[in-house]
Image (cartoon, rainbow, N blue to C red; front, side):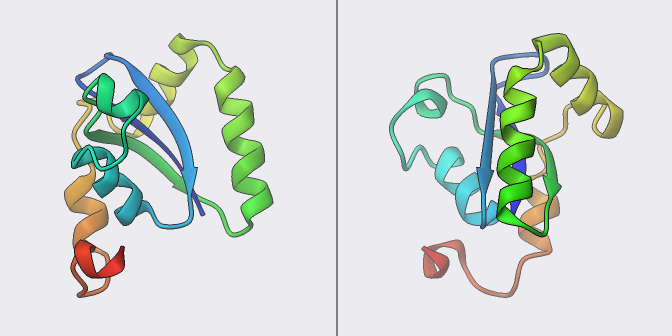
Length: 104
């Protein structure tokens, strides 16, 4: 399970979510496959994520982070990704040799 944040640019609009398949979910955001907040604000850049072994743990973490103020979330991102690089290549490159389309 993963808790993750997407944005449209450094220090731009933030989206915080939880998923069991980060590659699939990031692809959905990047391709605008699901209409809604991330599509409307063009949130295609994965800038932060963390892995959790248990679903309940990931959900608790997501809920806790959603209560954080924006400055704390920005600090969390910048601790591991100070340049706000898109982490897509990092997660996609480490996924099994299966295309995203085949995973969905």
